[in-house]
Image (cartoon, rainbow, N blue to C red; front, side, top):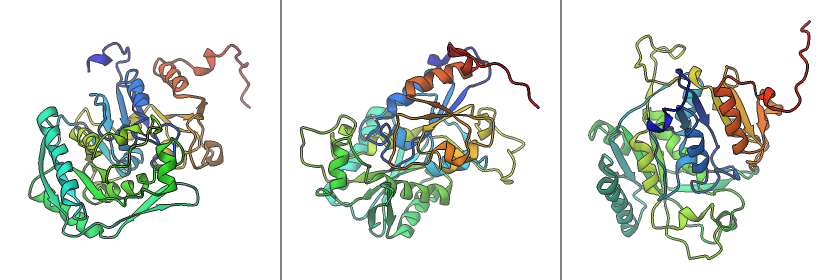
Length: 365
């Protein structure tokens, strides 16, 4: 990793960056708008682990050798210590297309996949069309978070199983036909930089199903008709206005997504593991929005040695604070300040020593 040679530590410094999906995060709640945060963090650590919601920017993406793309369910299993991560050079990717996608829109997605093979050299083996429409429905919770349902999950699982067993793929990209909510107020708000990504919660349901069932990397891109042109689109939402498909970023992410290591005894790390594998007890720091601390992965890592950094500027539609959960964190205002905390922590420097006033030591009784 050429850009990491200047790091002084012999032990790899590992950071986990989480911005939960579908909760209207001010940064990371739009189309790839958390990629600059991930890029900045990757410059000051050896290994950055994050998830599709952070790195997916529709037709825009940014790949780096030390950034690991891990689907949300797999990330929770990793954080709990149940699964490990095995970095790879390349995955063979299979593509699942929802039978509900119209012929022209399906062709657009196939052409996007062909383009990534021809221009980026991705190893996409085959595609399959589900034997029934997936029938995705979108929902908004009272909290404001988005979620959704799949009417035919068995059709999705049958398609994935065929790609895995017959085409021998190692990662799966899914494109499901989503409802065109062109008159939705939630969509209008999102396009103008407010509210919640109406699609994100349902996308997470789809990818979670594949990862939980088959234990391989997976990610989803929705199939939608292009929206009418709007000169006032928010810059944070603009990546989704560029064309007919959101698929390229998913294929790029899955191309090097680490495989999962599943111990036969889930209570312990296997005795014989590759030296480059990554486990939860190696995560030095975790960065999360300050109002979104209730996720499974965050709660798992809060019980260990991981330094948790909560970013208050990254407001969300929910209010689950570390204080309400009794989690010990370092609260910072911005991701810029979080970068400073990471540098100090990596260098073995107490953050308190960087402030102009320093409290006296107290006698422990």
